[in-house]
Length: 120
Image (cartoon, rainbow, N blue to C red):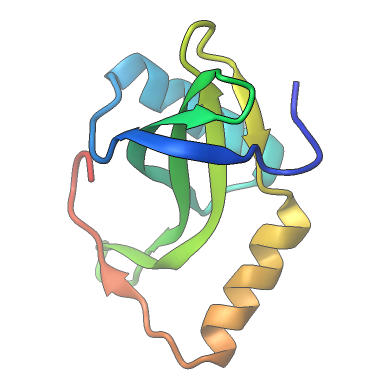
């Protein structure tokens, strides 16, 4: 189930963390199926939402493989929230929002940067 608006975060419980490979794969599959290729969920944080639920908040980076076969990223263009107990996606930025934010970064002259391999 996806909410129309991003949940309201009241507190960051853990600023940095990692997700396991199974959840990473599930998120990649979700993003490709529901938002199209070109997005990587990154920078997980454990947060508390206004309804006292805990969630994993992740940023969505616009990513691609360049002509030199390097992973590149344009920048953060959206967010994703995962329920800690069920590991179900609670919210994901819409395709329209993601595309709009990509255009904003491009219009601002942001250049893609190399992204590290593995978790980040």
